[in-house]
Every structure is written in structure tokens, then in C-alpha cells.
Image (cartoon, rainbow, N blue to C red; front, side, top):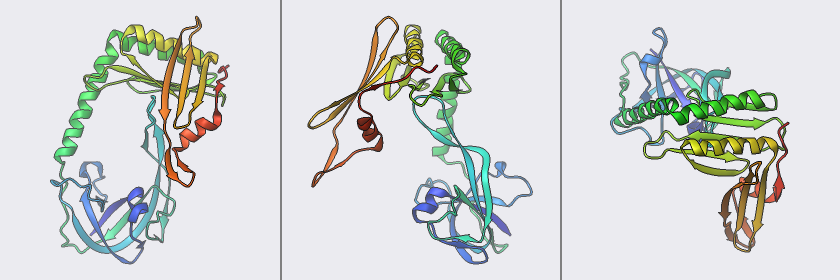
Length: 305
């Protein structure tokens, strides 16, 4: 019999073994949801060797012959909102059959699909939904329900209006993405020197906030109608080029400020202080984004139009 084994790219890059078509291999597998597999397709399993399988999910080793190695990459998509999250889309961006891959190699693809020939009497782990996965699904369902409720309240309707107005006003000068429920928006101006803006309303119970990112600055607004109007003014300020970055260098730390100015002169300021990690011998470690902000120095953003 044949089974298909999915080898994720990060597992393979970290410490995956070599796979060659026609060679014998042993893989540690966990069953994937059979409801997501076509009836005439081989049973699908996930290869996992980092101890991440929950204790209540069966996993064991099987040995067979590699009949086919396929490299697959999927389209990547980013969620709208101020917190950059990239997730795999459903569409396949590229794929190819490979003769094999070296240890820790993927042939340049995001994941590997191994078709493995096993003895017909080989025992295979059953598909089990772990308590951990069930709890995560319940949390996601609660958040989805909360998002639906938020979308129907007065603030949700106002945020929808702000997003619709932004689309009407700026679609020719910016790329605008909005989440399905409408509570998260990202606007990237077409001009490279313009300030981007993104926002999202929290769906976590007990934390009703509007998170906003303008330029490099991050702001938290109370989730109410009054602060939604402030969000609208921040959007107008970004489009008009009334956003400025400041870098205040000190001996032990650097402070960054993002200042957003309304048309009537009011300002919102987001501050962040960073103290670099000193390694000795004059070596200083810092994240790349911090170095970029230091190199950019004080500057203002251009208007979108």
C-alpha cells in the first residue's frame, strides 16, 4: 500500500534526513484528517520529529520505500492589521517531482510530499483530535462569534464606514486590504515614502482595544466611537503626510518616536526605547528593524497623492 507523508519545510531545514526515490526510509508519522483527503487518494500523514505531537495523539515510526518525492510551495498571504502575520494560502504556487533531497534540504520548496510504499500489513496510527487542538478550535470559534457581535455593534459599523470611506478616497494611491469581518485593515501607499497605516479591533475577551500602526509607531486606542474618530483623523494624517519619525540617541539607549499630527494641530505620539545588547569588544547586537530606524534618522513621510 501507499501513503503520502507531508514533511514541513521548517522541520526538514532544521534537521531532516535525506530522501531518495527508490530508497528505504523510516519516518515518524501522525495521521492527518481523512476528511480532508479525496476518497481515492492515499492516506495522508505528517512527519514530525520535534516532540510537538500531543501526548494523546498516536505517533510511531514506519519503514518503507520512497516511491515519489514532490516539492510543493504555496502562496503566502498576510492578514490585514497592525500585527504582521503571514500564513499559507490554499493555492499551490509551484510544485515539481524530485529525484530526492539532501539532508536538511527541500529543493527550494516549502514542503515535501513523500509517496511511500509500505507492506500491506503495516500498522498505521489512527487520526485523533487532541484535547489541545479541540481547545484551540473552541477558542477560535469563540473569537469568531465575538468578531461577528462586534461587527454588528455601533463601533463595528463605524469601523466598517471608515474602511469603506478609505477605499473610496485612497484606492488610486494605495493598496487597501480588509479582513472578511471588516475589523482589520491595512493600507500601503503606492509611494515608497508614504506612511502606511493599519488597524484591528481585538476579539479577545476582556481586551476591547483598537490597535493601530502608523509608520513605525504602534498605538492602542480604547474601542469606542470617540477613539474610532481619532483613528479616522490618524488615517487622514497619514494620507496627508503629517507623520514624523524621531530618533533620540543616548549613551545607553535609543528612543524612537512616531508623531502623528491632526489637521488642527493635535498630536498622537508612540514611543519606544531600545537598549542594545553589548557583546564586548565594541560589538553591539540589535534587531534589523532597529538598525534601519537608526539609519533612517529623523524624517517625515510624504503625502500619498
